[in-house]
Image 1 (cartoon, rainbow, N blue to C red):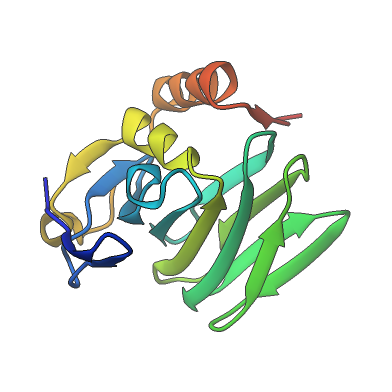
Image 2: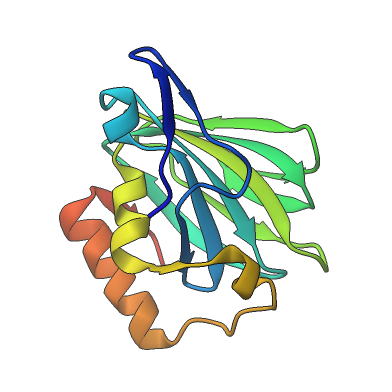
Length: 166
């Protein structure tokens, strides 16, 4: 596991490429700050979504979620709206708001995500596989139906995430 450098009790420095990265249903999630680092206040992670990767409609009752698009084109659906977000776009989804998103571009999309309070990062660590991102640069195969089913069960039973798949 990559170590963070604590500058003092209030500051942390994480050098590029040093966060823990998980392969989760075909996408990469690199943790920059987790609840353990922030006293549970928030988690910060970068998602690298493969082209056409989708997170189906869902809501969470335990955390707010904010996205900042670093690269790519991601289509979001929320509040009966559809928005195409590109580099520099910021979106916020409060607890209970149903939303979904899909990388509609032909290249991977990078999204910086903050969850408040922390907790959602634990879901990604549980359903994902710890990887070396340098070795995972190639397009990853799509997840199997069994992988998706397992992730949905864990999300709903342990992390308060409700999927709307109909």
